[in-house]
Image (cartoon, rainbow, N blue to C red):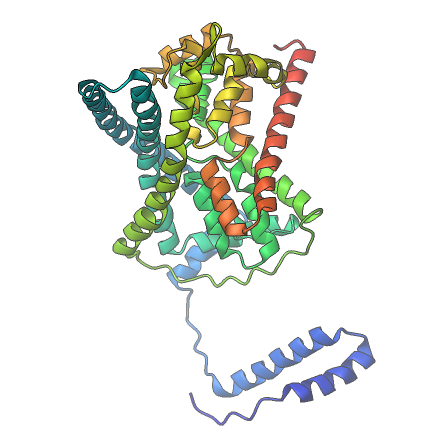
Length: 468
């Protein structure tokens, strides 16, 4: 760099000149000061910086033109997200089964030890069939998908693609008076909503950070995907020819995700016009160069900082819930267990929203972890006294149909699973990130009200028009 740089105009000089301009043209003083500073900096840059013009655009510029274009940017983004989902769901099946077999086999060993020790049946039930079984279920269902999803997500982050996603979505979020970086927290929420809430730290504005935290739950996490896929396969995939079943289920899940995203935009808009009023902050985002990822860093951040961090919180919450659920299922008042009495009490409300008392109770008892909702439901339907797993989707289908499920029950269960309250792990993360019980309560009550409202509207509309 050659040339002599003259001293920059002082702020006092700028203000004096800006006052003259303001009185002359009516412009705001702040805008004039910023304009003058940039003009002065540009004059200096022209004197001391030399430029070279390349004959053609570099490959990364061409790639940016493609990934951030209005025509191709969104389809590429959706396609990549679909690929990540597919790899996560398909890749997690076998590891989940293997881990489940190992952990449940150890449950049998624990039972033998309790028997040899002469432990009472109630102690074995609480600790083994309740606490340990819930823990084993959560680990086997949560660990493999997170161990696949988070490295893939971190890989896209290291490659430099995620900032392009935020750039693409910023305009849509600005219309809701939110921040484009919220899409990154939503993507993280697909792995785990608790991780999505923690990821809201990347948003600088406290107002927009709260909006992102309060709406992250509308993105289905991997704990809800098994339930969504199973019900979609039973009630939608089985209505078409076998060769089109997988495509139908994929379309149903994609539609469900898009509904969640639409609700996210709607709630973000409502919050930014009511309790979190404000103007959207400018997204000053430097698009980093594309680079090869550091494999060691990807593995450490995705496994240690994200997967194990979230899994630890989920286990802490789910294990006691398993013990409590076993007690409720095995303590009888008259001819019915406590679970049976609670389900009967919830039946009118469950019917009004297109579910039943057992389904609603399963979601309530599954508050610590979404992974245990279906096992609790099967335990309640079959009065088994402990959480069960199903051998096949046909077996699950027969159980559900025997207990009065219809297409309306399936649709509303999918909607309720998508929109209902966050798990306790996500709520705990919201409390730690916001430092406020008020915002944590809102993170719970907003999706709860929306879930009940949407399911009630769908159920009553279907019954009114004679469709159910």
